[in-house]
Image 1 (tube, rainbow, N blue to C red):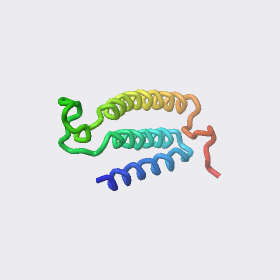
Image 2 (image 1 turned 45 degrees about the horizontal axis):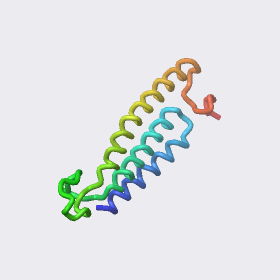
Image 3 (image 1 turned 90 degrees about the horizontal axis):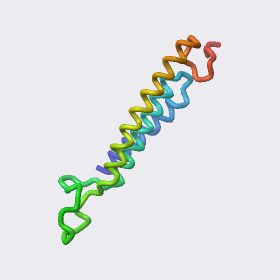
Image 4 (image 1 turned 90 degrees about the vertical axis):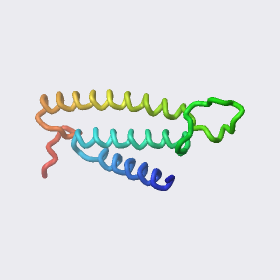
Amino acid sequence: MELVLAAAIGVLAASGVWLLLRPRTFQVIIGLTLISYAVNLFIFSIGGLRTGADPVLRDVAGDIAQYADPLPQALVLTAIVIGFATTSLFLVVLLTSRGLTGNDHVDGEDGTP
């Protein structure tokens, strides 16, 4: 399971970096979103990959290793909300910039030879 999660994080991060280097603004925004998804998965995986474990300690006398850490889950939930707001702000800026300049290239040029 850890190998699949590590591969998913790697693919998301690599795809995000590749899109981040593209010349169009929309591709840059999608690249930033993919990188944020990769970081969210990484932070979520820090809490441990346990199935059927309680997220909160109920009995202190029990073995602590049997419980999942709730802090990464809370951090990822907060990061998802902030990422959604940032992405929507980026899209509004993209649409405004495209309306004012007539193109959506990052450097403002058309890019055709």
